Image 1 (spheres, helix red, strand yellow):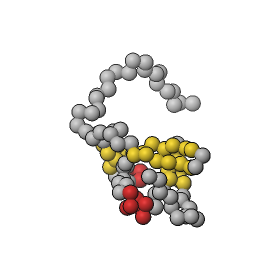
Image 2: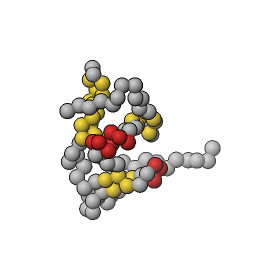
Image 3: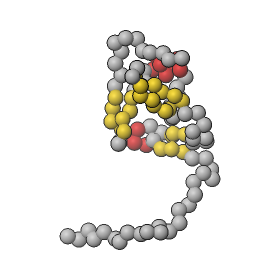
Image 4: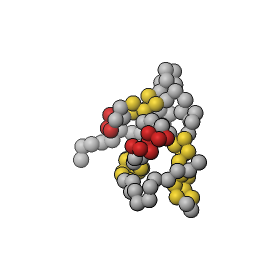
Length: 96
């Protein structure tokens, strides 16, 4: 089921790093029970943009914090320690 905002309601798109952020109005987030950190697929069609929840996409992972202090928290054992770089770069000479 697709629900639309009332006609004439504008939603702000802001810059977020190399991507864009689309604000979800509070009444829509409450009605659809959208929580902070949820992941969605975006589909662009002739009728507009449609969002599908990406359930199970990142099991056990969640976003923590807000703004510049926001990061992705992984479940224990999900991250592996990195070994030596197989193709190290030469050090940069900063004396010029």
